[in-house]
Image (cartoon, rainbow, N blue to C red):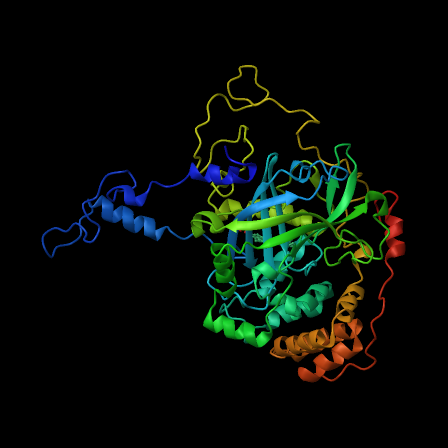
Length: 534
Ligand code: HEM
């Protein structure tokens, strides 16, 4: 009998391809082939015949081997493992996988770089994705995080602009500079909400030594919901047991040349050697009534909740102990989605999260060729799936009976679970106000937490940040872009701005400010409490 953690492995067995060593070569139709080294020709030296179905099938299958790479996070490495909670979290969430320390939930994790294409190098300066799929008894839960706790933009409507600026230039697919480019820094200088994440990007956090030595963050404020329907705001943190380690820039560059698979190989080799990487899952919990207790907006994904204010509470651990058997079938075809939630975990109105809840399924419909990709072994829940969504490309199950609801004829229509029980119930959040296309004033302060990050750095960490700015920004051709960026840095910290300015050929900004509070949104936040309008 499979243990709960083995359920996924058991399920995968059912999808194993026929053993290639068990018999002779066949076509896709199961017809044995005499040999596959020569095509069928009309005469010794004649043309290849159309009737050679084996030749045509083999070439056709090869011609169709590629699917679109992910529009971001194209390059990655994945592994299976399990999660187990330390204790019941029932006080805050009814999520079944967070109730019982004796229950192990199978997981699949994919780590990734963001900007580069599928064949790029691992050790580039970039954010790293850290996406976890929990195959829970109540359905799949995806925690689709990054190794930075903050993001570059506040509203998902800016995501296409941001990614276009980050990617190589549209006319020749080449970044303007050696590794940085004018378009990214132009965007940064015009959109100062990027600054906090940019500081993380210029720090050593952007060149992790190993995926095994990297933190993960859910970034957004999510919501735990208890069995009684009580909401608690929650931020998720993954903490690696091996500690957080980075490369230094020279090492990172050397690795890019010597072993572009440096991080992927490290993860694979460690798991093969039985050195299973482990992370602790921690949460920062904020009661609903404290929503406006901070001098930043909990819905703003460019902000952290300082741990001095809300400590991280460890709630469980995750171990990765099995490499995938087939990169394409599993790591490439895995489909994470922020909207894959289970009862007890809900969203907030973070405008970046709201956009993500649309984007992932949408992109996967094209990337994975239609609506049935949740049937792929790596995506398939271990919980039963019963609904009337049946047709479409690549349906691999045979459903029976009718497929509509309500339905008095029976035969195919699953019963409604009704509220309560195991059914997902959306958190009853109060909604109010007028439609408006405007960023909330409570999202306006882009400098205080950026300064906090800079102030928390040691001297040598600051030196690395300054050198990274000089290297990246120094390559930007447009003097105005360099100058505008330095002006923003001056609002973060005068010394930082001066040191960067000296390295990128820009006059030191006069009257550069010392770190300070640039806005005091606490008041405006308090004013949101009433009816939710502004
Ligand atoms: C991948 C969109 C922000 C983490 C992707 C993909 C899209 C996307 C389209 C490719 C998915 C696929 O082809 O399967 C967006 C949008 C965002 C956003 C529209 C903002 C509005 C974020 C943020 C995080 C994040 C804030 C981290 C907290 C990831 C990760 C992946 C990913 C980890 C790779 C998943 C994998 O390994 O397959 N994103 N993203 N994204 N995104 Fe986002």
